[in-house]
Image (tube, rainbow, N blue to C red; front, side):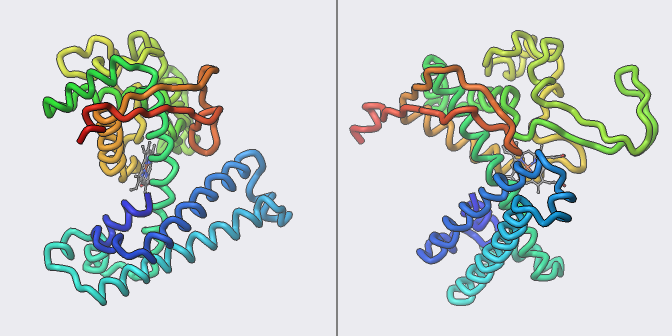
Length: 303
Ligand code: HEM
């Protein structure tokens, strides 16, 4: 994932450098640890852990320091690569780094933005991909239908599959907002300043919102066949409004490419013997290692 963000920031040419690939691999690993350390702090008040200088706090703090340092060196490496091989005008126009520079964003801030994006994009996209691959590998007829759809250059079912995976397995399962004013929600009086949480997990599985909510029915999202969706806002995997996910399009593009290619090129099967459920580790993750078998389809193997 840091590779995707690097190419958004600087263009894909920087990824050709072997030194960059090593730096990005190392970066992915230390970023992943942020989730591990933060999820431990979900079970213990972080302020108290900091005050008592506990191990869980020290590990978290040193990991965040490492992430910021490695993020900054990646940006510096990208800048030096660009100096060595200047970009075309079009490449420059497309790169986020140049847009931020043109908007006079200080370079320290640009480094922080890069790190923020990498942290926000990492495990969210990785586990959403895992869940979608899991859902698809449990349904072989659906795999064939999506492969046929792709061969016909269509993508409605694939789009529906991704919506279904995000509905049933929202990686960010809670959205929290402080009420800006006194209000009424569902017949309850809520005072200004109260923190209100929505459980996307519960609302995505509510029969009042979706017909047969536990079934994966990609067709329910095809326009004109939406009688199985009673309330489309019952699923909001990227939240909504001003603080919604700014990486939504990047994430959806990645999911479409991955799932589409897998359905076209492989026959997939889930080998887990026990039903897979989700648990919360900062993001929603499977409660056991997913064992997915991917067999290359003969037509592709012959190419
Ligand atoms: C399937 C993958 C993803 C999911 C399900 C997801 C979900 C979310 C959700 C629910 C929020 C809002 C949290 C809230 O309002 O309380 C959010 C915020 C955010 N996301 Fe994502 N995200 C994903 C991928 C990404 C990617 C790829 C990026 C970066 C390229 C990204 C960057 C961000 C940022 C920066 C915010 C904070 C926005 C703000 O506070 O204004 N996310 N994400």
